[in-house]
Image 1 (spheres, helix red, strand yellow):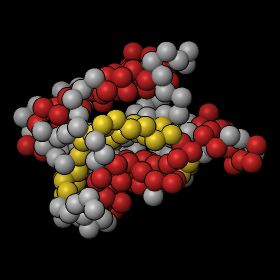
Image 2: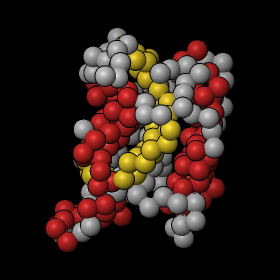
Image 3: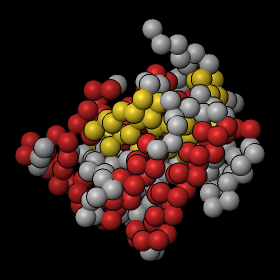
Length: 223
């Protein structure tokens, strides 16, 4: 049996839907004794009332390279934005690739040897889709780092309730996925954010050696 007691987890992107589900599940898990969730703005009181949550406010363009919380048993990353939110392809790449890789490098340098990424179905550095190409580039970058355990989780459309930001394309895709579910291939069906979070948390706690990819249709089976 894999020993999972007393784990310290580092969570990036804790203010998003997947990130918030990761925090809720991790904070309720008896195997986790400390969670550090660096964010730009303070997290809501629904999670900050937990005594074992640390929520440092950071600027992801100037991350503190000497913070003691970089060292953890595992880092989970759900950082991400949209082209509309970012305003340009360069700004999107900055958040979804550069910020993610910067956090990964600093975590690894501090001794965090397990990293779990929330990526996307179809991610490929050779994709014709800019979004999927960036996701693939991030996966490639992380794969070149010396993590003992690297897990890439590739969900399809996320089903996690209303978002704080406007994403009409995602809303339409979710509606289509729900309406025509029997006709849609399993790997492209909508997946609950809570299931994505559960798959990521399990990977963080069990820390399988090497690199593994969890495709969207396998996410619910990881629970």
